[in-house]
Length: 177
Image (cartoon, rainbow, N blue to C red; front, side):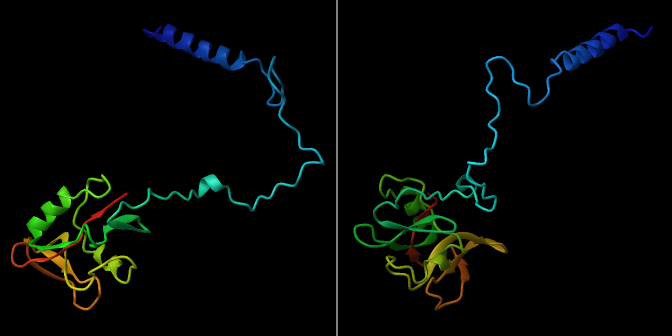
């Protein structure tokens, strides 16, 4: 006899008893106190299987954008408007990065410089002031991490890179809701 085989036999027998000992009830059997499954009557309205359930496609919107910002969709992003009393400053990139991190609009924290891909989304958005001219981004240039991308959301100038401390540009902060 193999050592421990008694334990294995006991386990096997225990599993078999559990499986067989479940009462052998059929799926439609009702147990004491359980309600039988509802049967579909001829009086019930037909089920429309083409209708989508609302829980499968939720329409979740973030909270209203705080004063001094607006919300862009797809994906959601709060963007500083640059209107008074929260004007956008013209700074070098390190100072702009710090200004965004310190920004509080509507008691919201966590503001940052936009990415290279987020700045073009500002073009033509009603409510955004001062969209002409280059804006600092947080996106570094892959070939030289001392440089970052600057982007003109109006589309007038090409996106380009520049050293972080070479020249001041507009700082417009963003935040994910």
